Image (cartoon, rainbow, N blue to C red; front, side, top):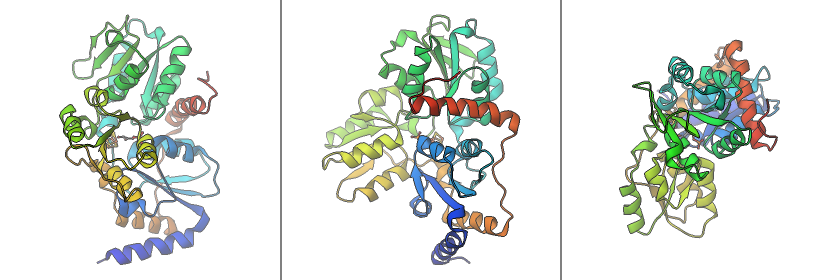
Amino acid sequence: MNTATDVSRGIEDLRESLGSDLTIAAHYYVSHEVKRWADEIGDSLQLARLAAEDSSAHHLVFCGVLFMGETAAILSGTQRNVYLPRADAGCPLADSATIDGVLSAWDGLDHRDRFLPITYVNSSAEIKAFCGERGGATCTSSSARQVFEAVEESGKRVFFMPDENLGHNTAVEMGIPEEEISRFNPDTLEFEGAGPGDARILLWGGSCPVHVEFSPEDVRAARNRGLRVAAHPECRRQVCAVSDEVGSTDHMVDVVSAGRNESWAIGSEINLVDYLQRQNPRRHIESLGAARACEDMHRITAMDLLATLESIASGDAVPVRVPTAIAEPARIALDRMLSIVEGRGLTP
Ligand code: 13P
Ligand code: SF4
């Protein structure tokens, strides 16, 4: 049986022998036992940008969930192979929007020429391709506002999927009134709120099972104990409205690390809370309310990382593959996001 020491030694040896041909990337939400081996730790946007960069490393091991591995594979093109340590680590939010459901919402829109489809990267490659083929783009939690604003500047309105809360929080931050927000209910296949013809923004009604659990009562309780509260925009509007800071994972890392010696309650995933505490040992940092893990991210272990490195070394590793007919239009949607983030605007 492999002890933790054997696993560590195995990873160390293989990293050394694969050398500059290997990059290990990890999302903040994977556990410390995995993140400690990463060359790069980041949020979804940072890791997508890493995958799009030129690199001499032919192997990118991506410690994250399926949509992140697919995104990295699409952006890496033919220059490198991307491997996921756990092929069964998915994202229930991404799974909440199927391509058939999205097509049925889109085809049922009377005024669809007024809208551009925008998908959170937490979505399947098919949905990214759907957006790319219709002039739309992807966004991450740290780029949502920039992407929504670019759509409005182009004279169109946003049809956003699949995270209702990220869409709602971003819309409110942009000053869009509630009565101009419409919600598509994927269960009834009906629009709710503003009629889709009048709406300035349409939101697919999906949510993250981890972030949706935080409540305004959790925020009040943390505040009563003298803590400042930072919440991810996948949390409900009622939670974000009363939090001190709202922002992507990377934004939370910045505000918590940059602030004075404040104590924080974090409305996000437990491994991010753990990371923040390790990075800021003199500050008090805790989960907002009950500690909540993303089961899929949490599934990835150091043992899985070792097995992936062993299979790369033996030539047996199976890289993430996205069929070209899907990867090409999905890449267009991803490139439009990167173009907006890099200040080049919404490209045709
Ligand atoms: P970030 O965009 O902040 O990395 O979030 C990704 C995610 O899956 C949040 O649940
Ligand atoms: Fe998906 Fe939520 Fe896990 Fe992020 S935290 S990967 S949105 S289930």
